[in-house]
Image 1 (cartoon, rainbow, N blue to C red):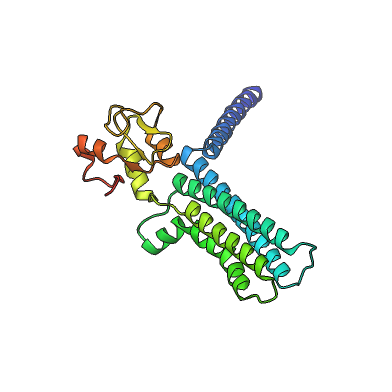
Image 2: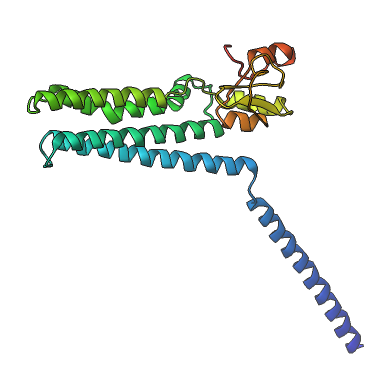
Length: 254
């Protein structure tokens, strides 16, 4: 009798242990699945990384501007003031433009919402705002400075103004897309789309009149097209596909 009880006890312990082990394995599998990257989570992290790098580059650009201002105000001595000012302005330009391109790419991966129009504008055109911060204080001080010789002042001011204009134009997003517009395109357009090397829109049909004579066409998903900077649907293709007319899809010249 005692041996039977012991055997029954051992059996129940083994069964309980097996149940616990199964539950632990299930819990581990669930935890592992929950930590797997979803495409949305991965893209979110990619856009955050791009934004962080952009801010670092903008900080370096502002640093170049500050050094240039210190040289201009004689707070830092250099042997050839004009040469150093030009070098710093060019570095400022390169850093600011690179930062703006990364910011625009992040906006295409993870666009801002249009629900708050002011935030959408500021988020979309942050590159232009930062271009002003990176150059205007220096330009104002150059114009007001009376210690520089006329030649140096004229040349450096002209270069700084040109750098500001170039950076501003290169940083502007002339065709920004909202999160609502991107989500609509991704959910509605399931077939591949087409775009050209230098175009700013994507096409539903490879025989569209806007691209029929193009030598090089890229084919891919609408997500890939948007993230490549083609944020609007071609108006000719939209005319061919009236089912997209009353949706939130961004259409050229809408």
